[in-house]
Image 1 (tube, rainbow over the protein chains, first blue to last red):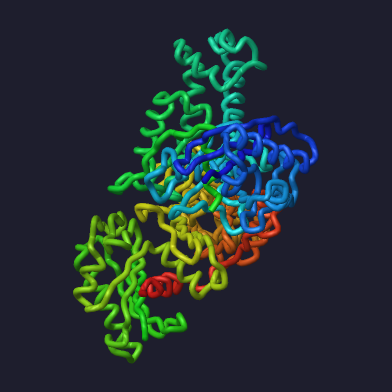
Image 2 (image 1 turned 180 degrees about the vertical axis):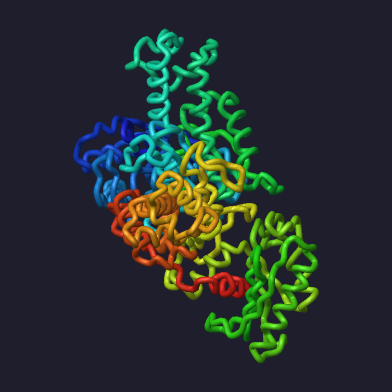
Length: 314
Length: 314
């Protein structure tokens, strides 16, 4: 049998057909195209499901069920997305709607939780019982698996690991707080830190690399560092430290077997991981424990959300 | 049947006999008197157990088992305290040692976890399935109950909630990091903040209240505030804000049904709780969720550790 996993994002709707070995055998993808009515978005999710199934060369009869990873607060008991601000969803009974369109049982989970479940089922954390997965993207997302199950708190709004303050009175965050980890360790945070450093260092190579402040992206300071630019290196060093501070917080809280870090920044590989490991070794509360959390890079990339969403289907 | 709970602290060893209604029917207490050999400490734990049992007017035959709440990393599977720095324990097989002395099965858990379990069994969180308990004392301790069970991470070193950084590059912490929540929200942190404010405000009533910098305690700024002292009020306001920042972090992570706050500072009651609730209402990620974490004060005080430790006995 097959399962369909849908990764619903602010930019794209991606449906994937997943086989029993947790491999994606076919994809279908369209733009989310927000803002538009939620009914249209859900109709496109159903359309992408059928299209992916067709591409896989199977029929809907061979699909056991459909899982959805959605932004926001997703109540898996009721099948309702209680709130997903960037999609404009409020108390949307997404499972019932999709189920009626597809004639299949539909399951829901928060997208960061679904990605964590994907890494747990078939990725970087597949041989353990507990893991924390952090995605460093536009924001900072977190998913936690405890005793083999997604942990989402009593109201399904839990493990917003990016929305924990690491700098009291710090940078404003999209959640309304100041100084959240997300405001420092996300690509958005890195870009802000890079622009500030460029304004302070008019002679930095970052100006040549980016061209202008508008064109700065997450790679700018890394490229400058590799070109021997001191200001670029300082931005990278500080950014990695901000990531480390939050990762160590999560180890001190959860002590998972595996701490898995994903997102675009992970393409930097050891440039990122080596200093992170050094900070973690020095600062974690469990530095004297025999059993320590293993830090690793997410293995499934963007597929984690689809494989995890498919894994919701029982 | 009865159970014995032992609260092993850096200052006192307290054993309590607990009945089936989770009530303590007798206590025995002696000084921990560190530093001294761990064998002597364990022998005193056995002695206090027998003394409490005698005071309760029962015999050891009526005791089902003994539970211990100890500082440090406590491996409940092996019965070993892997490390408790303030007691000088390293890989101490405390359950085997006590069991041999008492002829009873002995269970171990970290002291903050045991206190959380106590509040969960018989205190402020007794009618829920998940809670986070924070103790604001000399340090900041945390215990987490998920689905009715103590959560301590894969290596039993977890939920060190006080050792999460809220101020990058902030005050030094006993754990080796800088800027931990504990360094700001503990009584130790409050005393440091109070002393600094006194040095900055030589005319503050805090000088009259404490007498000198050496005699400052956690009550000093609260008393000054009540006497109309602006510097005292500023210290209290800021201290409560530091507490709130960490509490909101914990809500955003765990979304427990109940968040229970204990420790000496809780005697301030609504002086503390009213502003905390205001911060939580404004800043928590789940501010739009129907189901929110309930903030309350720990109900069992120092008894929580004993009742929780006794509750470890199966």
